[in-house]
Length: 156
Image (cartoon, rainbow, N blue to C red; front, side):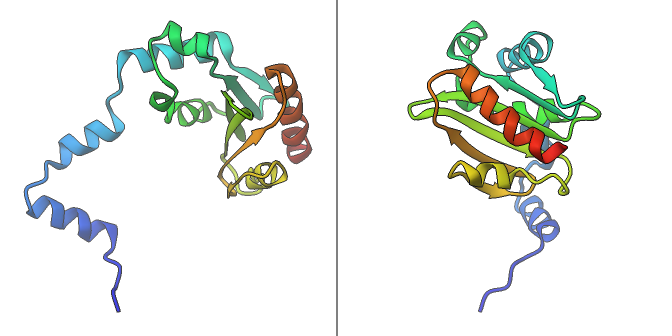
């Protein structure tokens, strides 16, 4: 039988073995490429949409937008968390093109408004505060309509 070591003690063990704690924390939480930062700024200033009386924000990460900032989708993992820090938001989504339609990443700032129910309705998954799915439609406009309908039903 194995026991799980609390994270605090695992960190101490890594530090005892010579890990540079400050370097790791800085790399994980306090450093990002300039291209990603300009992309996130552009999203907030020009591409983010806020609806549901300021409770829902989403953005579409088009290939054109990614190309403009010389980034790849894999570099945007933290973008949804950047957006969700805006005061008053409850649900945040990032949409991107996928071969089967549009991939949607969802976050909730409040477990009373679970996003996993939205994802599950579209064969996705996750938990109350973080979930994802694919909306199987042909255009971003159709995907936005489907997403808005699902989110607004939760936020009512």
